[in-house]
Image (cartoon, rainbow, N blue to C red):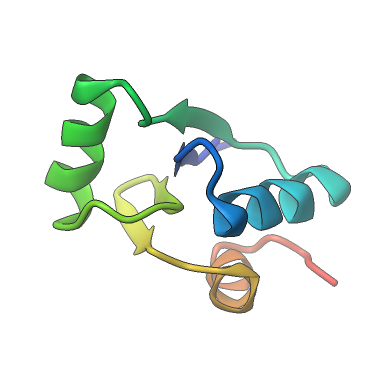
Amino acid sequence: MIVPKLYLKTGCPWCEEVVEYLDARGIGYEPVVVSGNRAAMQEMIDLSGQSKAPTMNWDGEVLADFGVDELVPFLKAHGVAVS
């Protein structure tokens, strides 16, 4: 099973909301905190073309600068049952 990377920033309310949503539904992800981590930030920028979080990389398909409203259809498109 593919585990998406979720790029996050410390203190970001959208990041916290997305993490709470995923955790509450048992949806796995690999958290990557970009705050204070130049290499991780550069990886996110190279991947998405921007520096805003949260950003998710699902096996090469990227959802950047999103909230839960944008996350739900992205998850559904990847076969994740969400409610």
